[in-house]
Structures are given as C-alpha cells and as structure tokens.
Image (cartoon, rainbow, N blue to C red; front, side, top):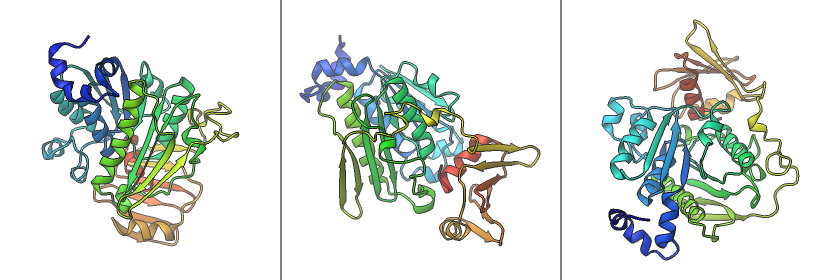
Length: 340
C-alpha cells in the first residue's frame, strides 16, 4: 500500500490511467538493471528513479570527463574535478531525487564473469551502453534467464530502440549480427544530446509498460534520425530460424571466444586488444584524424589521444592501448574510438 508522501510524489503519474495506483504499486516492487551510465544510462535512470521503480541497479566501468557534460545529464564539473566513477556520481545524484527507493551503483566492467550476479533478481534489463559486444552479452544472458531486455543506441543524430521479451519476440541477434556494428562511436562522429533523450524516453516508456503489466508494447525495432527527419519501424516478424540465441539456445556471447583477446603486456604500460580480423589503415586514418593526432607508417597507425594514452593499430586487427596497464581503461578507450 502506498503511504501518504508517496501519493503526493507520484500523484500526477497515477492520474495517468494506464498506470494508476495499481501500476504505481507494481513499479514499487520491481527491480531494473541499467548497463552503462553514460548518456543513455543517466537519462534512463533519471526517469526510472523519479517514476518510483523500487530498485534501480546500474553498472559502469568509466569515470566522468569534461566531454561527458554535453549530454550526460546527471554529471557536473565537480564530478569531473574529482574524477568520480560514473556509477558513484550517478548514485549520489539519484539518491537526492528519491530517497524512498533502493538505488545501487556498481563500478564494474560488465563481463561474462559478473553478468549473472548483476542480473540476479532483476525483472528487466535496459541497455545504456555504447558497444555491441556488451549488448550481445546482455541479450544472450537475458534470453537464457528469461528476462526482458530493452535495447537502445544513439550516435550522431540517429537512434534505435526495441523491447525484446524472451519467448514472445525475436532477440537482438535476429536484427543485428555480431559484426553488425558500423564502428561509428560518439568519439569519432559525435552525438547531439536530443537524440539521447529521445531514445532513452522510448526505452523507458516500453519498460514502464512492461513493468505495470500493460500489453501495449511496441512490437518493432524503431530507427530515427532527428536531423534528417526520418523514422523507420521494422515490425517484429518470426525470429530467424537459425538465431543462435532465441532459437538454437547456444548463447554465443556467454562462451569464451579465443579470438576475442585482451592482454595486459607486463612492464610496458600497454594493453593489446584483438577483436577484429582486419583493420584498414586507410579507413581508420581518415576516421581518427578528425578527432586525434594520427601518424601513419606502412605497417601501423599511431593515434595520440587527448586523454593522454595512445592507440597503435595494426592491419591484422590488433590494437595496442599504450599508457595504461588497466584493462578496463583500455577497453573503454578502445570502445570510444574503435568500437567493440
């Protein structure tokens, strides 16, 4: 039963007939995991916490930087000065918005090793990340456990979102293959904050429908470009018969892939990452020269990052992240500039 101060807090939301008092009670008993507390994650968590979802858990591996402030709504210049982990800064801000629910920020890289623990007890998982390797991990783990997964992505002025429900809808792999990423990231082609807010809002509204047990979920993968004024909706059909996740139940992201190699090179302040079979030095020179200092040789591409580290790209698919031995930091930089 809702107490008096909760009636006052959520009064306008309960006046909305599809939620009402019964829906508000349902929200109070739900547990949601957000993976990633960057642009999407901060907007998503802001909505969920203010809506009164009973337990909001989120995980992120990164720290707040000045370039985040343009679009990551929970952070400010004090967080940048303190180099706060995003999960810590977000938890501090969100607890000031709603002290009546449980808010749990976890500083962690979401991996095969910890995904089960993060998902434990969750009713729904929402994508706030910036790379497809983590999205496929979430997709496969959610479908194996029977937990709905709200996908979302934003880059440039474009965005996509969809709600995938195990046993009812196709999964992410039915629409996007393992190598389906365009390798475009916010750090290479930019992003405007309105597309972030729009995609996050689409994600949250589908999450709320599911959490209050409303059957009017959107059964499609929505793609929008707000600068070009384009909207495209790909209606859900039958899942792909050969989908390794929702049909064959093989869950490839939950298996170690020998070619997905991340290694800290002892004594060299270097992490080697190899998740691609080939890198075109011509292509990457064009892309990265827009956002960093680039030096090309016949054998490699050296990229001096504004963060202080250096990327060295090789045609065989290897990338060295120099200037750190921290695998989490190296993966974060790789995801920003190359894309996982």
